[in-house]
Amino acid sequence: MQQTSLPASEFIAPITHSHKANELEEAMAGVFALMVDDYCLDALNDIFSYSVPWQGSQSVVERFTKLNGLVVLRRDDEGLSDTLMRIIYANWQALASERGLGFLQFVLNMLYPQQNKIVRLWHSKTLAHRYPLHLTDTERSDRFLTSRIRIELDAAVNVQELSELAPTLSRLVPWQVVPQIAVSLPPTEDMGVKVAAAGNVFAVADFSPS
Image 1 (cartoon, rainbow, N blue to C red):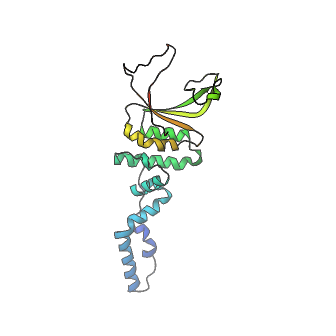
Image 2: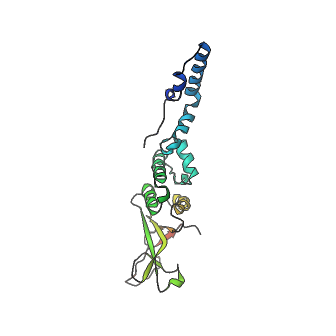
Image 3: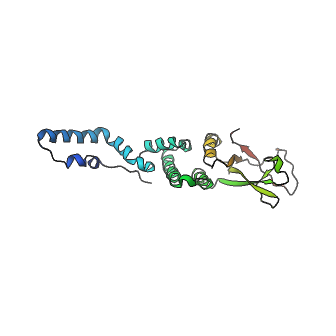
């Protein structure tokens, strides 16, 4: 995604192509052109890119992602982070009111490629009065689909980074969706977990806000 910028000649074209009645006006136009080139060009380019901020300078991208609460998604690698933030913000603007689980999946794929999964959660119909204590990720006829999801991430992800990203990831979903952000933990021999043969067990570390 290429950064948009204009040369000084584009900004000063109305001055340079205007009629100058005398030497004073000619000199004033020359001084203005030099000022734009020497002092104002970066700022003018930033303003010019406001209509397409993901194509602007790094400061413009950071300014607009802060405005939309997305800046926390920035990674430590500045070069890679700048590219990711441009792509993420461009898609954020393009989706507008249609943002939802699709955009969340897109962001997860950008940040944690092949290390993430969004799981829709179901709840027992007979135990509906105890909602949401009996959630499961398995669909059955005696269960109903809830508005809750589990964002499962691989154990190899940076846990410190994830703890900082979790609040923002939670805000990327529609208001009616309740996300649980979790990291799959590798099985250990001394966990003391005992289950029946028909059960499915996995261990997670929960990063959801309390």
